[in-house]
Amino acid sequence: MKNNNQEEERKKESTFNLDSRFNQTLRNVQGLLKGRSFPGKVLLTRRSHPLNDVGIPELSPDIERSYLENDRGPSEVVDGSSEGYAPPNSDRREGVLMRKRLEYHECVSQYYDIPDTERSDDEINMLRQIGVDCPRTVPDVTFFQLAEVQKSLERILYTWAIRHPASGYVQGINDLATPFLVVFLSEHLQGSMDNWSIFDLSPEKIPDIEADCYWCLSKLLDGMQDHYTFAQPGIQRLVFKLKELVRRIDEPVSRHMEEQGLEFLQFAFRWFNCLLIREIPFHLVTRLWDTYLAEGDALPEFLVYIFASFLLTWSDKLQKLDFQEMVMFLQHLPTQNWTHQELEMVLSRAYMWHSMFNSSPSHLAS
Image: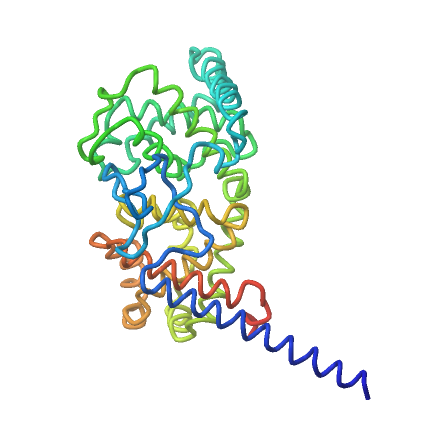
């Protein structure tokens, strides 16, 4: 009898804890919808901000920040330590950064600054492809069309590809380097990115900025290398998970897409390959990447929820389109006038669905 009572007490306590966690998650999501910051997330910014009289950092206008009116709080600094290649211990950080930068400079000298006669045919073709892709990178941002910026991007991408032969260079990786490049440049270039000039940057700073971008890109891709190996199995796996999640969350949209014969690979492959950089205005990318970096090694799984939320932003619209119209719509999504508010809504829903489903995979079953 006593054991039965204890068992009932344990069940009640378990139910209470579950309800408490759910209610806490609900409150968190409600807070997100009001524009407050993600609980436990860090923000991507290189610059440290002075505190005002009430202890709130005064944000620099150099890059449009991803705070809403009520989303103000101290942010982490992306100085290498938050991306994992420099130690958090400040006493050791300078020495490690110097060593890592020197390692990158030596790799550039060894692999990039050589004549084509010393490269293999595959390496020549890869460098040629990178040279073709760099001018296509963020074409609507004038700064990235500068020859000097494209040359820096070319060095970063080629060096990374040579040192990661399992994947080599894959189209789309060029996009992934741009947020890091912007953030590290913002420490040295003032004002809006539209007014940046590479000639305002001291020439000796460029190699170190490239090195920091290289190591941050390497750290990011270490957690998703199978996204860029032969046949890109990591992306194919996540696209399948995206399809299953959408089916569970919004069955009418899922059914309509299936009836029209639209495969998720036809539109979502680019999303996973370029991490949505091509789908939203570039001034919102740093906010999106705040969330990416905050997820750390769990990022690939969380991408599924972000992209489901992104897709279902147009749930009602999609159900009115036929196959051809859906393909055209999803290739040219109407995000050009998006502000931080629309992006925050996407991330809020993603966080809510992740809290609901990620630890309960059976909830995604039919």
